[in-house]
Length: 367
Ligand code: ATP
Image (cartoon, rainbow, N blue to C red; front, top):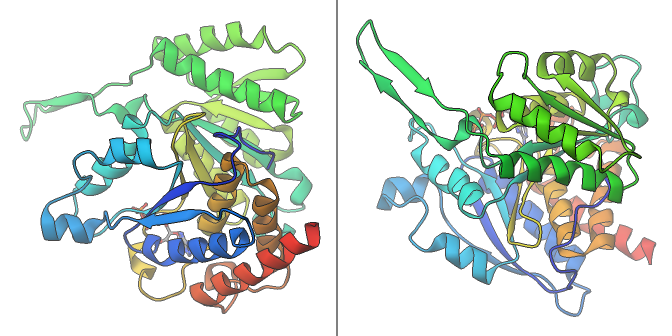
């Protein structure tokens, strides 16, 4: 995918690594190995500091996100490489909410960028679709909507129970994600931006989305902007994904539509994402969760984490290295050097080692 805006364009950076739970703890070290290999030739390679925030720590010490962790990440690190959180031993998922939602909200990471890109024709379940048809970016609003946790119960546990979950949309929040989508399209020469909502049913919250979108599109007249209701978008993206370059939508719809997109491009094992506040410490993570039932077996696909690392490199201004990671993943797919979820027989570590070597080769080849 075309690049995302740089944090500072400088070559040196400090990365906080949070592998987390389940397969997060298996794929993240592979991504770090690949990053170390591909940035090693640089004069000031990346510096990695690992944090053990996870279900294990939460169960052992009762600590999810430690005090002052947010300030430390904000002030001392340029980016965060995140694995996944979720463990059956913490059914409430309290630690995951504290850590991941805590970082998204407190670092104000308002852009959730989830590219949907088919990297090999054989991976899509759509008949007769090829790489050129499936190449789009989903921007999900990442700090508001139904995820803010505002709501409550009334008469809980009785037959008359009422549960309320508020959908919070601020003008500032809606405006900055819509403008980011237009700006991304403009800067990357992409011609089409689609805003998706459910304003026919959500006639207050998404009326705001409509009004902000109509204002913003007037400033981007060279971009073909359109609106689709989320149900129509779900149909259209399956019927003909080639009609989309950039999609922008709210927190909940972005979550759903980007998982749908991930399946069109080969499944969750391959899907990367970035949680960005332009110019500030931002977080990069595979779209997949901790996948407890395959955790510990050594078969998790590291591509999602490695492709998220490529997004991180771009954010930090390491463009050739980011391109090298993507070249290596494409080569692995071509040569079927892949884990079982993609029909291969390789183990997570074998794929990671192979990607490290191929990324370095790809970088040397570019020069
Ligand atoms: P969580 O609740 O933390 O989101 P989950 O198991 O419900 O975890 P995911 O981890 O997102 O959901 O994945 C759903 C399924 O997709 C997994 O159980 C697994 O079969 C498959 N999957 C996801 N990521 C990978 C991966 N990296 N490698 C292989 N299979 C994967």
